Length: 156
Image (cartoon, rainbow, N blue to C red; front, side, top):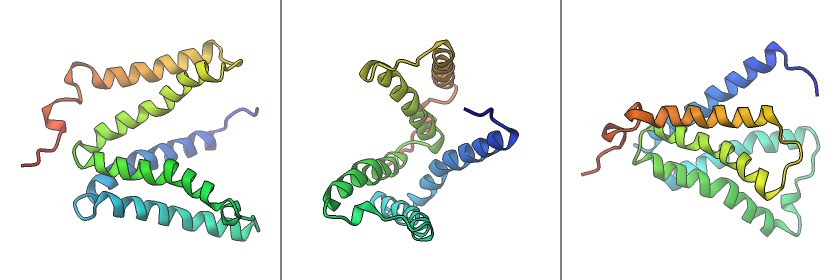
């Protein structure tokens, strides 16, 4: 594995900003569109660059094969359903709370992966990384720093 360079850190920061701003943008979109429309638009506009890249690189898309129904099911479970549920949930909570809650997903998956797949390469550095990640989330949730009655939209 190569050592990370400055450009790697810059790209990681840009990716984090794009990812985090998605919740803010979804919150704004919920004022004009429903969760189904938001999920459709995210999948549709996300598919365009992927299809163009596959066409440019001459990559055969296996989803158009005889097993298309499996690919459709995987796409629905991994993309459409989460995008719908995120848009539906952001209607009730503020976007920063949604981003914090979603940040627990990779950390939880890593911890579950240790027990389910019995990861052999789990070491002290990875343990410290998980503890730092979880402690950051705990800090954000502690002492009503971000979580209080003002974080929930009131629908009367």
